[in-house]
Image (cartoon, helix red, strand yellow):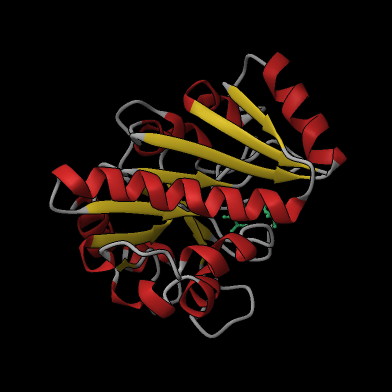
Length: 224
Ligand SMILES: O=C(O)[C@H](O)[C@@H](O)[C@H](O)[C@H](O)COP(=O)(O)O
């Protein structure tokens, strides 16, 4: 794991947006398409605000979420809503969006079709992840229902997960899909997440600290 500490959050967000855009650009110099996978939640919005204006050939970029809450696209809890409003705008509006959600009561109703379109966008070229204080990443929640299957080396690309702490079902890319990304960044802020990262580094069991299955490949970016 690499660890980068920043003097402040604003600087980190600008720097990260430049880094992600630079990596996508380099990839597009010798490949036809690139796939960018990003988290939802409260942290990455400012990165999206800068990244959406990056000068790159967005028409050749596929964008997907790392995980989604199973709520309609106009819900304030929808990660799709977040990236439609803050990432897939400006220059990035010509990117191709690969959805993890389709309108249906439960994820199981739509999984097959969603998995096919996700599989067609793999491997991930540039992966950005968040992390929670409980050491979850994407929607790989400690001891969550569906976690063992999502951590398995032969896991499907996309799985439904449920945990009592979360108000709705979710879908998440599996650990093997995240681990296969060509470049991985984790963005975290504040003292609690820094402590959670330190706890995770000492933990051996991915069922207790799912983020450890991704950490060896990742650069973690942190600001107070
Ligand atoms: O849908 C989500 O919530 C995310 O994709 C999730 O994995 C997120 O990155 C972490 O929970 C951190 O969330 P915050 O940035 O809100 O702390």
